[in-house]
Image 1 (tube, one colour):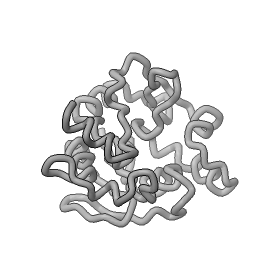
Image 2 (cartoon, rainbow, N blue to C red):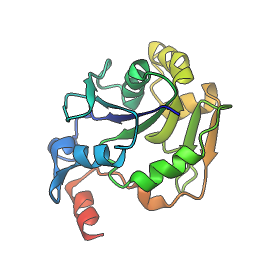
Image 3 (cartoon, rainbow, N blue to C red):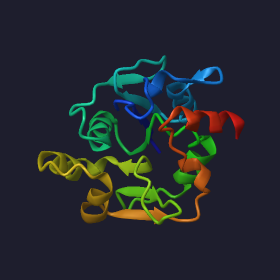
Length: 183
């Protein structure tokens, strides 16, 4: 089965205070950590202004509207099959997490998305089938940028509960990276 890895890295890092993608946690940048966690995928895409060996880089077609734009770009450039989609600021989505998600891929749905402890979808820790692209493009055109809402209303999806919550730790501040090193 063909799996494309896609890391969206086009945010402004306003709360962080500097470029999150290039911030070092230990000896690796957050971008390198995300890339390493997805290294087993057949095709590897970065949506944003960064380059890594072995990864193709594409711009975010609509910067500033949120991750839906990066997802549309990833699905447009994916050769076929499924896209494992994440943000650069979710370093605990490790290879074990993606392997677990892989076991839940289902040809009858367009999205496999985990639920966090509040019961909300973690749309930046999900698998999207390329068949979801027209629905996501339509949402962008209609200026509906909320990825969770598009999944709920327009895409055939399967939610996963019981996923260990530490995977969804999002890096928004420098303190969040200290917690990663200490934890």
